Image (tube, rainbow, N blue to C red; front, side, top):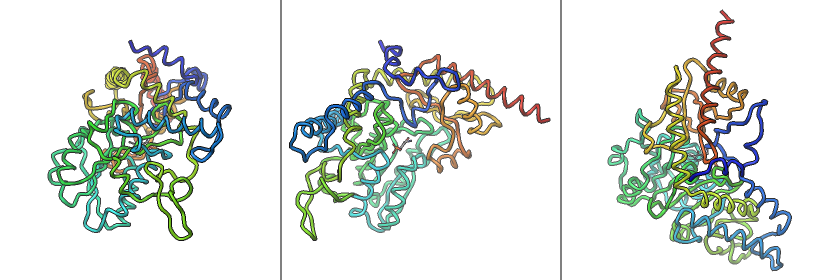
Length: 414
Ligand code: PMP
């Protein structure tokens, strides 16, 4: 059985109070909390074997290198990548996408080529492509979003042409919670000879993800959204693709030989990891992966589905709530956006915070999607493995308190 109580005991921060109320943390799509195993791994590294990796020949350097490279193996296994040579460590999803956009895009795109994105992309899977399009003369096209918050897949026939060189789409929307049918989209992309890049920032932490089943060529995600430290991102790309690409950043570690006027490159994946990497945080990310593996991604997903179903049901019982995104649990994850009639999302977020409930209010780095929804912002509650239905009850109580608070202040003004 999925033992939430036991899981919660591993997360010291969940014991704290905010404004004298027990914390209800429902901002997991922004970043997640860390179990003590991850925190301990950081302390252990700095207390016992802090050293620079790959270059040193002393014991500490050896231990640190082994630990760092072991996490590369664990990461490959976590997403079912055929080889750890496909795993590049970066700072976050944003850097992973920028790395690929630059290293692949600059030498593979030319005027007239097309990059196909969607209207529900996070800015980090949009702005890098705008920059590359500008630099190469390629153009951008977009899969539209339907009123139910799904991708309009019927448009793919029209949008995918031999000019399409890359399809870059999010696996799960950070605003709508929509899970996109990546395997189908990848198949359609490959039919016209395009590559498939998946923004996995919201899916890898919450669903079992298998890059071979998805048949994607590239996958980007962030450690901090899956119990790991900030400052670690992953770029998975098929080996042949990484082999064929030029480096993104130049410097130490990524070279094989350096002359004064030219250099040759290290093997993949090190060719893409210039300079001293984020050793401590990568090692602690390994503990996060191990934690998720022990809990079981399918069990985590089932727990989140139950919470999401409960959250959607309770929210829809509140007067004046507008919900965004699909209602079908099979088509969505646990990032739930909503608005309260007549109230600004930031005001809602502020009053919820006063009740100890942490949610996000804003455009969620998806301004084009906000325009599509015809709102400036939404409130977003997002769940993870340590959340409970009791916490959702606290959110609903806090929402009712928010409505009552603003009804009273509106009344007082008259
Ligand atoms: N893509 C999606 C779908 C996201 O939700 C996020 C984080 N909000 C990102 C990309 C960017 O992640 P990071 O800030 O870790 O680079």
